[in-house]
Structures are given as structure tokens and as C-alpha cells.
Length: 172
Length: 193
Image 1 (cartoon, rainbow over the protein chains, first blue to last red):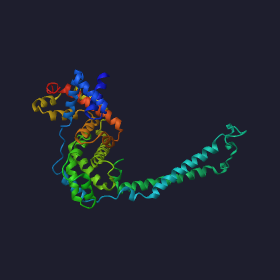
Image 2: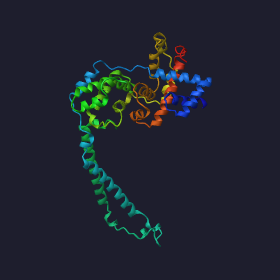
Image 3: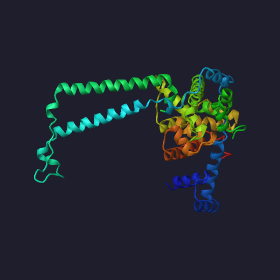
Image 4: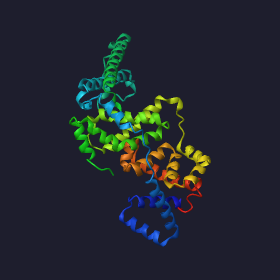
């Protein structure tokens, strides 16, 4: 534990991440304490060596290959310019409808009898919902169908954009 | 450090229609990108293809690069995601192992490498081979920190991690490298440690 703490402090010192006070303390420890001095020398050597490794090299034709490939393409317009605002609004509306319908469904099926009715919680207990007659299986099925179709349309828009601008998804 | 025009200058030339200027950036970062990809994909042919793909993707998306990070950070991020996507598509050949397991396996190995090192007596090659024996995450952190001039925040962005997680990983990677070198190359490094 003590050694781990020492190494952490020394790495911070070597990386220049220690604050001024810590730097002074560590410098003093390195000068006065043999263990610290030895640990510091070891870590410094690892630090030096890690920075001297050579990079791998691709084939000599690498740059030429890339340039030949990009000659076929043009820089795609920035993402902002081609994303249809309607897609964003479609997604927003879809989730609003979904959240709203869940709320309505929950309200209708809630057992309001368990709520205090004398004064009511902020007067809401006396609130009645008369949407029950509207909630028949046919209507629910229709609602689900509309949502599925809307989802498909959004997915289709998304996939067609992926097809035309595959590079836009490179960071995802 | 590189010479010649800055990345920003080259990028503005490319964005203004000078496609050939992009070759400057490819030459500047090809080795870095190739080395990063090789940390994920061990086959050089595949790595070369992915590295080329990285530069092509970057070129086509240049309009999206807003300069909020260094160009190199953005490019290495593309290299990392492209490599990961490649590995996902090539699932049967992927054998995900946790870093400790890889490290433990590496430290117990004692093959022809030892003999090679004695022959080569090459410190650089020794460190490089030791790094190769670390897990791919550890190796990548070391590469980005020491060779690719990326700070902890940049590395976090490239690897899609938190800065603190990268800091911890860097500490561990260096500790493992030290231990690995001490154990594996005892004779060769007795004058160093």
C-alpha cells in the first residue's frame, strides 16, 4: 500500500501533475530517502524507455492508396446541414404521444378509491376521468399500429441516411 | 512534433478544395494510426486496410470536424472505432480476455523472444515487445501518451472513457510494464534497474 502510494505520487511528479508543494516534498524525499531515490530512478527509466519505442509502419504505397481512394469522394456536407428537422420532430412527437398515452392509461386504471376523498390531495381526488368508454381493444390496437408504422418510417429515414452518409456514424 | 504547416492550415486548404494537401496529413499520421489499429488487429494486412479506411472516413467527414479537439485526437478516435467495428464483424476470431489475464499469461511466457532479445541487445525493441505483451488497452494508453502526444483528456476521448479511468489505466500499464520487464528481461536490464 505504502509502495503503491509512493509510485502514484512519483508518477504524478514525473508527469508534472503534482502541485508546487507536493513537488517540493517529493524532491526532498528523493534527495534524502534512499528507497524513494531508487524508486524514482526506476520509474524515470520506464518513463524514458516507453517514449522511445518505434512506431509500426504501413506499406510504402499507403499514402498513395488513400489518395487514390479519396479522389473518388467528395467531403460530405456537415451533419447539421442534411438532418431533416422533421425527423427530430417526429421522434419528439412519438415520445410525447407515448408518454401522454401511458399517463392517460395509468390515470384511468388507477385505483382512486385508495386516495383520501374527504379533502383530497390538492383537490385532485375529486377529478374524474371519463375516457373509459374510448378505451376499447380496437382503439388500443389502432394506436399501437400507428406507433409501429411511425417507428418504421423513422427507422427507414435513419437507415437511408446511414446508406448515403455512412461516415457520419463513425463516432458512434 | 512535426514540421511544416500546422494541421489546421492543412485542413483549411483541404476544405477549400485542395485535395492533394490531405496527403500531408496522411503522411504525418499514418504510422500512428497504423500502430493504433495494430493494437486491436494483429494481422498487418487487415490493419493496413482499417488504417486506410480511417483516413478515408476522416476525409469524408472533415466538414464535421469543428476543431474542438486536436485533429490527431479526432483521427485516433476514428481509428479506434473503426478497429472495434471490424473486430465486432469478425467475431469468431475475437477472444476477449481481461487485462489481468493477458498480463498474467504474458508474464509466464518464456519463448524464443528471450533468445531474440539477447541477440538483439536492443533496448527499444525490448520495450516494444514488452508493450506488445500487455493487454491492448494498456498498450494503447502507453502508445497514445508517450508516442502520439495525447494528454489524458485526449486519450479519454479517443478511448471513450473517463479521464480518471485513463489515468488509473496509465498507472497500471506502467507498473505492469516495469514488472514485466523486470521479470522477463532480468539479464538484459540489470544495468538499467
